[in-house]
Image (tube, rainbow, N blue to C red; front, side, top):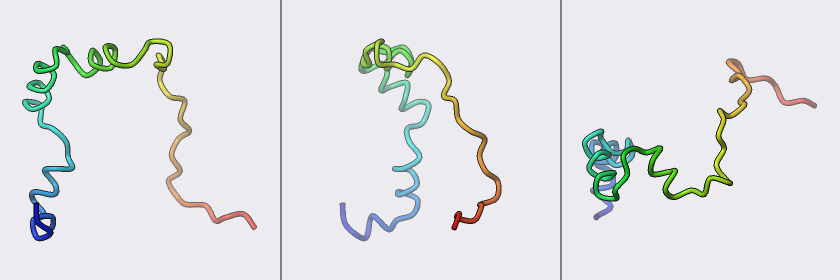
Length: 68
């Protein structure tokens, strides 16, 4: 890889968007997992997994000023 190739926009986007559905299926087949959830179940111990949705606050649509 060269510095010039890092500036190739189409290659950069392809590297950072992630695998396609076909690539993901190929990866999972290679490692013997039926899905990404199955992969997580095989690799992450159940006692440290969070088995519920995250309790996230609603996003703030407009930035608020810093308190003084």
